Image 1 (cartoon, one colour):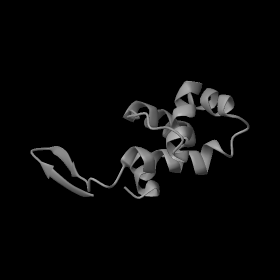
Image 2 (cartoon, rainbow, N blue to C red):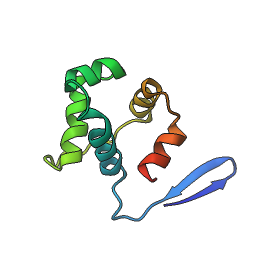
Image 3 (tube, helix red, strand yellow):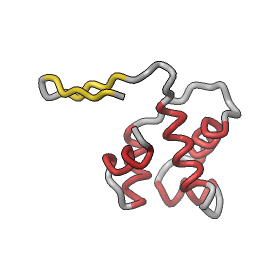
Length: 95
């Protein structure tokens, strides 16, 4: 991914083959959700809906063809509860 600042805006250019949602979902699922007591518990602790956790899991495992564009707000809530910044999160994911 190339990142360019233009007139104080961050522009991101990605390869079409790179699916950001899948990368993010896989990271969250394999590193955090599977280690939680349950999906419901993960959702409750992180202030998100259990249905969101199921979507993340399904995207990560490739068990759905449904489109899901995870919001920055959702990612922020998860990061906030884990004590990391968005910048740190995206570095951990490799984006």
